[in-house]
Amino acid sequence: MPDPTTEPASPRSGIDPGARPGPGRALTPAIEVHLTDQDLRDALEADVYEGLTAPAKHLPPIYFYDDRGSRLFDEITRLPEYYPTRAERSILENHAKDIAARARATMLIELGAGTCDKSRVLLDALLAEGSLERFVPLDVSDSTLAAAAAALAREYPDVSIHPVVADFHRHLHLLPEGGTRLFAFLGGTIGNLDPEERWTFLADLRAAMAPQDRVLIGTDLVKDRSDLVHAYDDTAGVTAEFNRNVLRVLNRELRADFDPETFEHVALWNEEDSRIEMRLRSAVDQTVHIADLDLDVTFRSGEELLTEISSKFTPTGIEHELAAAGYGVVEAWRSDGDEFQLTLARPLGSHAPDRRPPDTGWHGNIGPEPEVAGP
Ligand SMILES: C[S@@+](CC[C@H](N)C(=O)[O-])C[C@H]1O[C@@H](n2cnc3c(N)ncnc32)[C@H](O)[C@@H]1O
Image 1 (cartoon, rainbow, N blue to C red):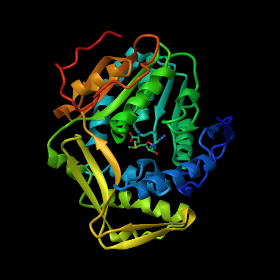
Image 2: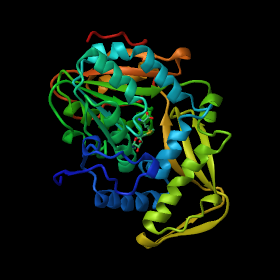
Image 3: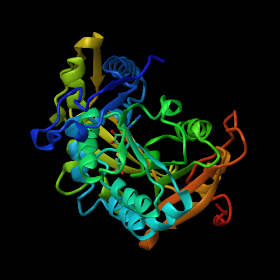
């Protein structure tokens, strides 16, 4: 692993003038970079080649989030149909004080922090608790992170803001250490990982955690199928634009010639795997050329490209999957109507388990409702 570089908060690919940090060096937190342009480029080439030459075409969701994708996601979170953000925020607003009292964290590390909107609720509670010294937002989207970090530095002058550009699949062991850390993984982002990726992620995080550290995980819960589908297929078409944005990223970064308008946005509920799947369905027979990969990709009319999964869980499944990766539940809170759950967990034992346990899907209804463990 190369040494991290520390850069002033100037992004790799530009921030909106409106979001640019204000003058004054103290207000411009330096960014720690573990994911360089070259790393991202190498991963993009490998992922796109693998995903578009596979029998069932697929792409990982990480490439949605260029500047435009991050802005579109932010718009999605304010749509009337998109309940997860409101539900998660309401849990935070009602219970952040309990979370802060349980965690007593000196450092808040947010994985996949995005615009850091909901982070403020946790920051306020941890400040009121009197424990917080440092906030470490981590994301792959450097420009979004830079803008968020600059705004937070102005709003929270007493907190050291330490943004990190990194991949939460690869760089958890490189995060700042010391004190008592609270890792936050909000927005239901863990649902974008398949069961094996979730287990690996949780085990990697477990291995990076000290006994006093805690993790707070936001998960969307299984519910009425039509509410689920509407949340990912809004009437204003913002989610469709977000979905097609990945094709624009490929056009720009790999000199591909996708015509995004020839791909329909599809959101469907996969009952067996308990997840929403976002797909792009080719409306015509077509061949797309990806110049930088020297690759032609053929799509039949009606053929689908899987772009994102969003798994939905049961409280019991969450507890079982956490236990399998070496965690105990400290406490769990649900939103009104049981739409969404925030779970605070602690590492158990001295080591993370070293092999994947069988069948640990978080959606499995494989036991009684979880009992709340002590801190
Ligand atoms: C679903 S959004 C959630 C954003 C925010 N946490 C929220 O609750 O609104 C996922 C975020 O994770 C980031 N992300 C996706 N894959 C990532 C990865 N492998 N490593 C780091 N960040 C990632 C995206 O850039 C995006 O900001």
